[in-house]
Image (cartoon, rainbow, N blue to C red):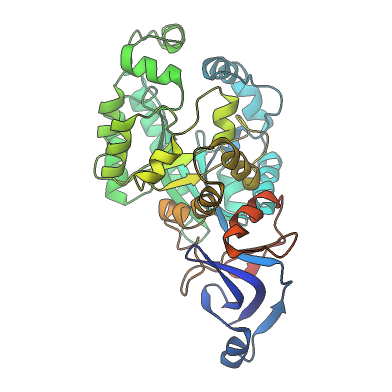
Length: 408
């Protein structure tokens, strides 16, 4: 064993901030106690005493991003969902071809510098697999299924299976295979059900984009709206392949990570809560694509677990999780700022771990030693402000440990 002990001003555990404590770990967390007790228990340990302004957190977890579009900076059109979608289709090949391993590695390192020790990568083509294998972080690799045209679904499903099988060949790495259903408007329900059944059989983490835009809501509810011309032009479809309700029913009794969910109503919230589904909140992406805010207060009130995620650089300007947390903090004015800050920290630690099932996200004995440290600008007047000050005053973390190894 190569035990390390970190001593800091504060340690985040179970939603609380412990003062004047230390943490002992090797590849996994061994114990949190006073420095004196830990030195007595582990006399051969390497000890590092950090500033009294330092906070030790579990590594942050970004549950939803798309690396394959990381080459985008000024190519795609922001402001409204359907014009953005047209611009994606127009520039897709150019962006995918420009997004080599170097570009994706840069995006991965940007996440690392903001304290992301694990992330969920939504992979449409499999071109990001090698970059994810080489990443220092843990990666839940979501092989995405798309296809609403009945004539093409078998071909697309077989391609999806091939990518899933390929990503399953790295059990000794930090890669965990998973399944993503693109969305209710873009996946035929028959093939979606096949993929969901496969996720259940293999006990794989499951995710789907759900109710991201008003265009999606109008199309699923009435077969009208901004999607009507789009589907007629590209797929010769005059109606949606499913309804919102029927699509959500496909995931009954299997907890699924629903991404965006800005257009959900009270009935949806009730069903999501009943099925123990979770929600990925991507506030910057939602703003840039012209959607409304997630009804976060209702989600919290209904005890639905949510995560805060960056989405990809196709609809964001960075993958820095602190920028995302700040944005979320600013837009939900109906929630106390201190309560929201606490919920946001929880959303990228404990909640995110429960979504991705990584044995990380908490500083507890036996959990993976995925740890980050950051420095506050001053001693807080009260412990209840630490979550808020951590979000507001941090751009990049001081250090990152993954499986006990210092990687930053």
